[in-house]
Length: 358
Image 1 (cartoon, one colour):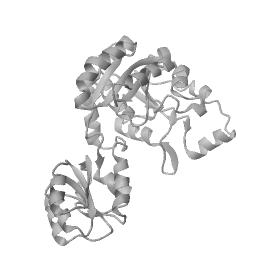
Image 2 (tube, one colour):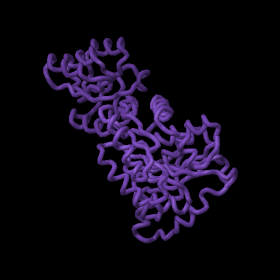
Image 3 (cartoon, rainbow, N blue to C red):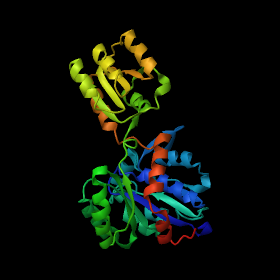
Image 4 (cartoon, rainbow, N blue to C red):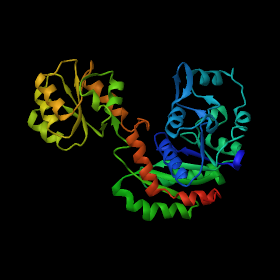
C-alpha cells in the first residue's frame, strides 16, 4: 500500500449503534491531526441506485461529505441486494469474495483508510465476509461501536472480544443517557479494561442525533406541504398525537419539545393549541384542508403544515418507526457528531495503538 497506510475496521454489535457517525467523527479528528484518509466499505448493505447504477448509500454519503477522490475510495466487492443474496443462497454465485477482498487495500494513497464493516458480528457470513473474516483477510484491527442499553452491555462486548480475539482494537459506547453517565464512567469502563477491552470513546445520548428532519417526514409520508416549505430542514425530536379535548391537549403539548404534532385536519382547536407550544411541524391527516386561520398562524410562526392522505394510526406508525433510523444526512447532525467525538473520543490513544506518529 502506498504511504504504508494503516487501516481500521469500524463495525458494530447491532444496527443503528452509531457506526456511520463514528466514522464521520473519526475522519474529522484524523484530518485535524494532519492525516490523509481514505474510506472503503467492502460489503454494501445499503443498496440504492444513482443514475441507474447500483451504489451503497453510505458510501455515496461519505464520498460527498468528505469530498473523497476516486483514489481515496474503495467500493463494495458485493452488495446485499435481493438478487445477490438469492443467487448466493441458490448456489449460482460461487464467487470467493475473500480472495477478491485480499487485494482491497492495494495502492491506498493515504495515511489511514477507514473501513466500514458489518453491523453485527455475523453480517456478511454467507459471502464469507463477516466482521472477523474481513479483519483476518485484511489484517486490520477492529473498532467496535456498541449502543448503550444497560450495564449488561458488558456481556455482549466480552462475547465479541472472545469471538474476535486479538483483532479487537477497542470499543466506542454510544448513546449513553445522562442518568447512566457516571455509572458507565466509574464502573463499566474500568471493568471492561480489566477484562482486556479498552474503551476509546464514551458518547452521550443526543436528542439531535435521534431526530428526523421535516423534509424526511414529507418523504416518508408522501405529504403535501401546505406552508413554510423553506423550513423543511428543521429537526423533529418527538412525536405528539392530538386526539383529546383542547385543555388536555395544551397540557400534553407543553411537555414536549420540537414536536411533530399529528392530528385530524378538522381539529382546528388542537391545531391552534399545538402552534402555541414547541411544535416544529403540524401533520394533518385525512386530506382535510385546514382553516385559513391556521395557515396564517403557522406562516407567522414559521411552522410547516403537512397534509397526508392517511389515517392517524398509520401516520403515527410511520413517523414513530423513523426516529433513530434516519441516517446521518443532515449537516446539523454531522456537526453534532464531530463535536461529540472531539470531546469524548481518545484519538491520541487510537493513533498510539495503530503506531501512527503525529
